[in-house]
Amino acid sequence: MTAEKNQTQVERRQPLFRDLTAEDPEPEATEISSLCMNCGENGMTRLLLTKIPHYKEVVLMSFSCEHCGCRNNEIQNAGKTLDKGIKATLLVSGAHDLNRQVVKSDFTGVRIPKLDFEIPSQSQKGEVTTVEGIIDRAIAALEQDQPVRRIQDAEGAAKIDLFVAKMRALKLLDEPFTIIFEDISGNCYVENPNAPALDPNCSVTHFKRTKEQDHLLGIYPENEDAALLKPIKEGEYSLEDIQGEVLTFPTNCPNCNNPCETNMKMTNIPHFKEVVIMATTCETCGNRTNEVKSGSGIEPYGLRIEVQVKGTEDFSRDVLKSETCSIMIPELELDGGCAALGGRFTTVEGVIQATKEQIISSSALIGDSSDKDAVDRMNSFIGRLDSVLSGNTAVTLILDDPAGNSYVQSLVDDGPDERLKITRYERNYEQNEELGLNDMKVENYE
Image: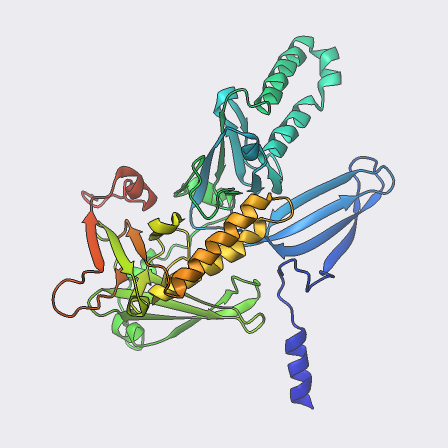
């Protein structure tokens, strides 16, 4: 009886952050009575914990006041801060660019260089909007105090009216303009209407935060240098002990954010190098993830690996993809970028299958508001991936890793593998900047 009761409790447990689906028609929303800042009466705020596909966990907040009709919607980040900041530069050249969906966090700054206009980070709350919506909200904020300003400062009000006219002219698209989104938390997303193909109008780069930016996010790294340099005493773990042990530490599930445990082990891949494998299993939602990180630093040269996938034997090749490695399939015009899939130890088939699953999950952003062509293009691309996985279409899988920490198994013991091409290259300045090498001092410490 007790076992049945425990089983029922496990079945009833739900993730804290759930997808909005038809199978979950009544999501758990919390209602809180709160003060209306417009009329001073009490209104109602509804909170919903959910996940935005291809983004992360968020808290949606909707306020409404039945007394004055005031309404307000906000979005707050509820997930973890990413390791690096993100900068997205979008060239707005058509109506489709104005209609792009944008996910902004509280730390997203927006700039329009053409007008020398900037919305500083933390000046607006996070939201899910469009490029046109950002411009409209900026115009509304500039016009908010204009009636009073025209009385007190007519000259200043006239300048603002002139600037607002320039903002409105942007939406007419008489000529293209650039809008830049920069987020130190890394939690900003600009829709790619050509997904899964490359976005010709938007370039995305990642950058390392400064100490001041870390402090702004509330990140204060612990001073562990002394502990790392401390000699190993009797009874403590040595490096050899760690390599032979599976270490366990508490964490949060990347899918539902419930507490769970991650297992970590250091191991050596034959003919390659030492890596750290981390596996997480969540008992609440059943999600399983594995991640691989290099255990021996950054190589002197970047690495580009090309694998011709022509049969089942190529699907079985072992693949180590580091977190800095990007995935490309030229025949499908696919470029996954370094953020795709993260670091993992799998096979060629596993890489392609995981890419398909990620594209399907990200295509949830293509909803009722998207045109039919975008939906048809996505379905067609997934069909082409299925053809590759079934062995009916031969493709070339390219792994490009500036850090040089990726690996693909050769099927030939002696001599070159005709279907495997490995090229090492000198990194450029941008790649070194992405890896944080340009500012790294390795000589003359004194």
